[in-house]
Length: 226
Image (cartoon, rainbow, N blue to C red):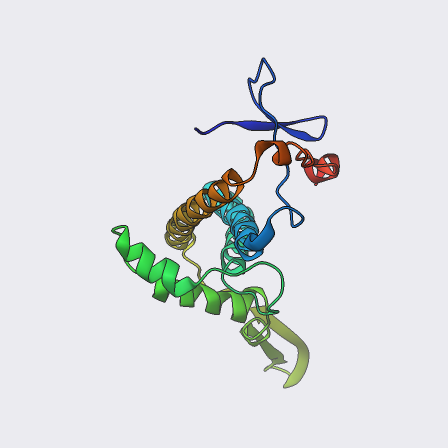
């Protein structure tokens, strides 16, 4: 069964539930028992799924025209950042990161796709050297001094910003394919955990589950506004 959900007065409810027979109760640390690690892994998968979905959406919004080159640049930069965010938790805190070798090599090949390890490393280098840090940006500037050779006089200091050519469409297609692979990986991982959680809660009496808090989003208005 795959129901559809929405928010009603900041509570999660089942759509088209005319008779009101469904109630959505909250899974949280107070009732998850020995499945804390499983629960935390599921939360991490949801966070990564959210970022990857936005990464894919940004790529799908690109228009590939001269007039939209700045917009396309902003979209693909954001897509790269969100994609890599799911595989690089440098601080060691927060969500559990995905294993890029497992996703873009082992899993990709298992579903009939080529390995994307090389492309992942290239995107990571782009992020590290250009988007997030300044290893290349300041070196790309060229500074000169203009001389009036008739008068043998110095005129002024000038500079030129060299912009390296970036293959937007080709790279966008690669990024999109990588997000699709990662999202499929997450989907399968989520399904496994959902089966574990259903089995765990099936061992509890329904009367106990009915005492849980309803699943609410009290900050939903601010979330939607953002």
